[in-house]
Amino acid sequence: MTLRSVSSVLFALTASASAAIAVAASTAPFDGKTNLTCTVQQLFECDSYAGCRAVGEDVAYPIRHLDVDVGKKMVAIEHIQTDLTSSIASSAVVQDKLVLQGTDSGIKGEPGGGGWTMSVNQTYGTMILTTTGNDVAFVGMGACIAKR
Image (cartoon, rainbow, N blue to C red; front, side):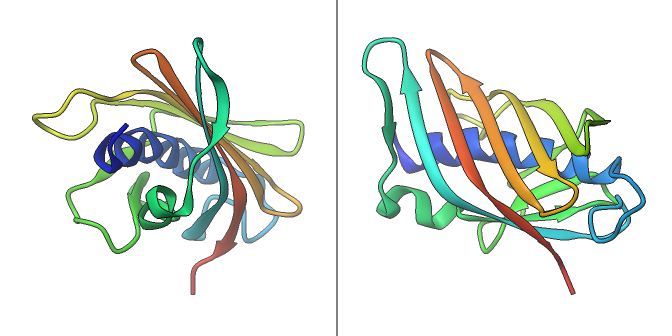
């Protein structure tokens, strides 16, 4: 899988994170009013043939930090092309977690895209990102902080 494919899949996950943040409960900074920077600390690629395996830092590092713009309901990969954004389609608070979901068509001219979900713990800011594509899923684990 290429860096662009992984970027596309993770980007979709990021989009879900911003939606969840937008609906967060009233406890700052995860109240839906504060923009966030989310960091993917561990990334796994899963398929039905080989199971799940860790994605190396050489592939994961460029897409490690996500900018979550709560007001615009957009997520972008930090320090990557500005046209790589994804919008948040739905959000809800479920048992003290901000849950964001959406779909993303991926990068123009390349196969990819899929659905994503992001869950952010409203107390600690820990997050889980999942995204699905053609015969592949990605699971990212990390945390979010308020952007200043």
